[in-house]
Amino acid sequence: MLGWSEAEAIGRPADMVFTAEDRARGAPAAEIEAARTRGRAADERWHLRKDGHLFFASGVLSQVRDENSQLVGFAKVMRDITLTKQQQEQLRRSVSEKDTLVREI
Image (cartoon, rainbow, N blue to C red; front, side):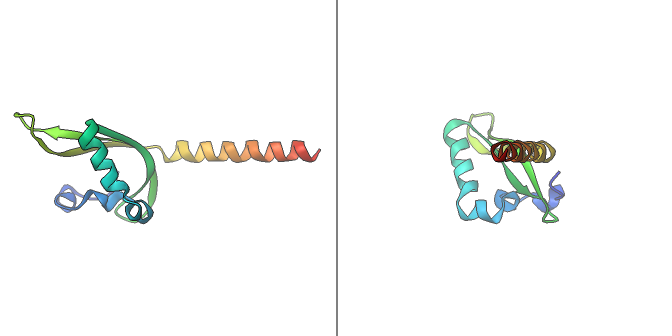
């Protein structure tokens, strides 16, 4: 989904899939802190593929613990919901246009 091979992704910061705007406002660190303190962090936001294209994803960042229950990292499962997001935005625009026309009549 993201375009990176395992070898390319391992060792890189997780913020590589966040937009520049989200990185600037600290979203990657906030998501990790939420998962660290609550066990998981859910989000829906725009993300970046390796080729630079944006996609809208629904995801959950969860703790990964070893056999001694020690936190060893995080894993994120995400689903590309770009089409759903685009359809919702189109529906909102259509409703707004209809409301505007009704007010004008």
